[in-house]
Length: 413
Image (cartoon, rainbow, N blue to C red; front, side, top):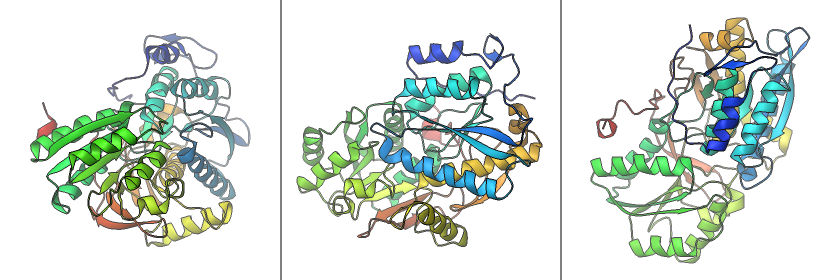
């Protein structure tokens, strides 16, 4: 029986129209539900899946490694016999860091390539653009990146953190461990930072933290002189950074250039992981904080194997990170769902999803079949002199996903 989910769509109307008019392969669509059968071909020795990542544009600095980790997961699964005895055949598309392109490529993968599931997306704008496409075609998207929450979809599985697994633990760390009383918000101008900052401001108001400023720059912007001047003049105890992509390079170079330091005014970032550190510059980031659910430095057999295998495939200097680990995990979770369902059919896979687990590099994760998120341990890290990130605080155990923040009194109204 299909569970009903609510979705809060903020995509541009043109993208929404594209998604709502899309139909499943070979059939029509009535209202909000696809009525035709899937065109996925399960008759042969292979099954097609789609990888949809930005391999060009401002987000390529982050998404290229996600593609590489997905490819590694697919190779592992194929070497182990595939899924239900079928080898995975990858169809890859470049989202080009543009939400409309993500929607177009998702439609192609579903309708023309007839893939069983799609893995990818990064920015919330790309996810919001794709959401009506997947719902309209009753297809599956596995989205691997932390996001602002306040969403759940019957057709999306979210293997990155939702708000209560990253942003709120990050705020708890700043309040309880760093004893901050004021904060400055800096972000890219799109869905995730603006929604995240609304949540941060509600948390701040409920916890006696003063928000001294809030600045946004277009995604991909490299002009941060005025923004950093405002940050410096405000004199906040800390900066909460929701910039995405290569804008972080310009921001942190400007930050250090104007004499701001991690010890005097720390920055806590939620979109800078190990692969971005070299681009931003270790000297610009050393000592600064990040909030994720996985770091390369996690000391466990599963993670040591993951890191070793990734370096073997991509070179000794390659690093692992949270989004790529969540993407890698998503493919293994899909395999587990399909095998539990004994079927590639979307509804069968969804019905079988609840409780599916995987011993991931971040630790054992389990799928919540109701909201399609997974339980995750929150980690606060600090960039070290080698460009890796050391855990300085942990939630100790996985946090159950609460995408709508139902358990927080300060958000209920």
